[in-house]
Amino acid sequence: MTKKERAHEVIRLLKEEYPDADCTLDYDQAWKLLVSVRLAAQCTDARVNVVVQDLYAKYPDVDALAGADPADIEAIVRPCGLGRSKARDISACMRMLRDQYKGQVPDDFNELLKLPGVGRKSANLIMGDVFGKPAIVTDTHCIRLSNRIGLVDGIKDPKKVEMALWEIIPPQEGNSFCHRLVEHGRAVCTARTKPHCGLCCLAKVCQRNGV
View 1: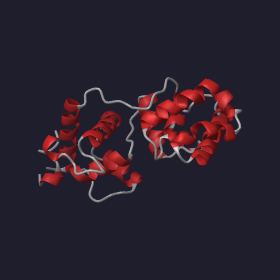
View 2: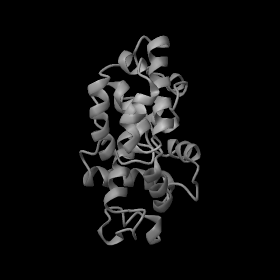
View 3: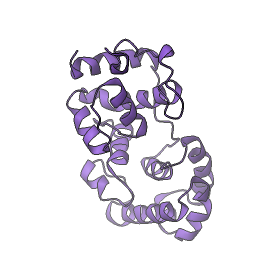
């Protein structure tokens, strides 16, 4: 089985197992997803969804958050960890949106990468979830499962995994495929415990099982 054949079968099986998989960060505007994905670094999505409620209650739009003192932002987002650096990035990002993009999140990948605190993972998430464009989000679940399943071979660098997956994942499938990997990585193919291979919908195509 080639990697491309394996990838197509993995996509099919994950669709059956997780038909409704989607981003687990709550947002109703693009800028809010930018904020949440920055806060989600080394923090659970569930905690971020709680913390941002207070942040948005006090700063309800880009202009308000851009004008906030980073120390005040830090006081709110501290429960997400790395409060100082996250607050600094959020403040700078919102100011840049206000001053250079008329308060709108750009729908261009390279423009997104210019925003403070936005890397390839975040930019891909915005491109896929907000703008419906081809995207591959190489978070820890994607990297771990892609290696275990056999879609990539011993690659840990996020950008290299992303580039390898672009070669075998149909562009229109990339975003939803990554969301399904997150669901599967949390429920079955776990990181901190032994993977539950006996319950895995991918067992018959997974390289870990010698296929």
